[in-house]
Length: 156
Image 1: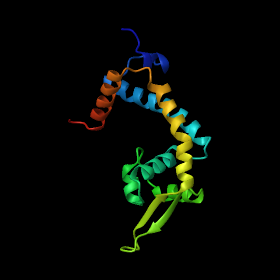
Image 2 (image 1 turned 135 degrees about the vertical axis):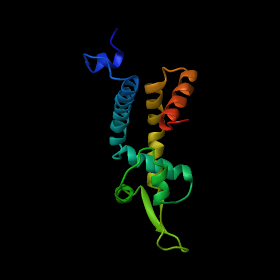
Image 3 (image 1 turned 90 degrees about the horizontal axis):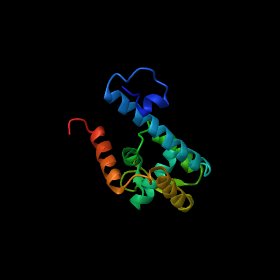
């Protein structure tokens, strides 16, 4: 039996133990490759991918959000959203505020400077998405999305 493309890429002599193993490792390898390009782009703007995600969430919400709400919407869940917000606040990209109803509740809102950083990144991010996946047909992207969602929800 011929070696799979992943088997060749990682120079694995023997076949994978199971198709699930190969798919899982292929997903990890692909994710790493795609994310590395985004990391380089974000680094040029002195932010991380996670910080970019927070800024996008806040811009999309159109209003301030509780810290835990932002954490729940993150693409990659991080154990310490507080420190992430600290760094964004120190950079002037977000600010914290409290509600009059419950002074314990800390809300986060994007600043004008944070909106400007996103505006600078909008076109390059879209261009990178297209560079990375633009060779797939519309039908392939629909199917790819369907399979990724299915993989995250075993038993469906």
